[in-house]
Image (cartoon, rainbow, N blue to C red; front, side):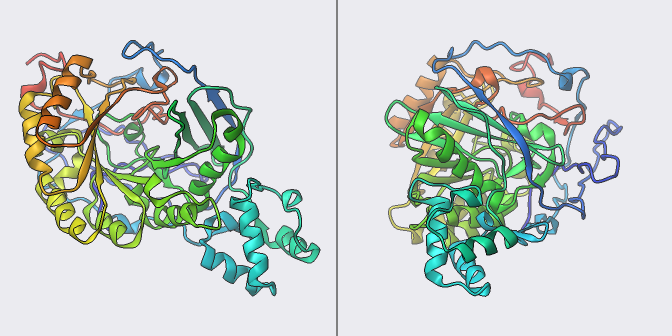
Length: 464
């Protein structure tokens, strides 16, 4: 598969991390793409920490202390239009689901799970009993002692050959939006957000990568570059732990969105596998319509997802012209708006009662004009869809500002008058950096900010 404008960094494996703080000339420069480290392996997680957020938030006013990541200015540079985007299939997919000499059970779909159990001399019925104790019956077991009612020999085999958990326990949750930080043994961290809703819906937002290679200019995670993909087990267990530890506090977890750290389709193998496990009728049993996978627009992987998965699709659009999208979402330089939308138009002809969700982050003075709203109506014609207008969430180093409420309402009304199904989504958890686009910790070595087109410099208070 092919990916967009990629920024990757090696993690600690007895070598020095590669630094992205490189000197570029003022002329157009071809940017480096670092492949994943060949020594990546599966690791367990150190005890993570949970940050509880209050149940009410100010709609726009937030206070952010300046971390070390902002101690020096980031590089500003341009990327040539003919930049050669690398092929993402060169990265690791981590489908060999071992943890030392043991198998990570939560990385197997049910067919693989049953085959593995039978390969050790046990019956398919015992595989089903174990599967239900991992994902169903309100047990969500994460160690051998919690596997009540299983054959003693079966449990002995599991203790010798299987690992039930990919993550460790977290601290007790309290009310409100929660951000869970899971620390890996290699020093990396993933973040998961649980978002309660007063309408009886609670959503868990899972990460699919540590960092992200897409370098979307408005996204804090994109500042990190890509550290590594998550395994299917690491993705699934975020949802398992949300149910296990937070259901009593926030109610039943009803929805899953792959909108945390990372570009899900850059890790397509493990994301499809994880989504398949989540919707299995004998397991977590989420409705496929309530498991949504989001992408910045990797078209080949998008087509594969629509063919192979029953889950819902979201596309992060965020602009109505190639000029703006090339800047704020560099993946657009590989897969233009027209190609992305025409692909959706054609693919959705073959899916019944299926609507794609378009996500549109509102950036003041950049993509929130009346002309943008009218163009958006034309762009999505012929595509069964819903549109989410999302309030931009500021973060350290960002040059963008959120559109005000009046502008968002005006934009929404134009779309609605044009026949679009449209919703407005305001910030949740932004005071603890748990909101959309705020996850992760870039550190001191970051992906570069791209050169701002001249016509938008005033909107960003950069001068002309």
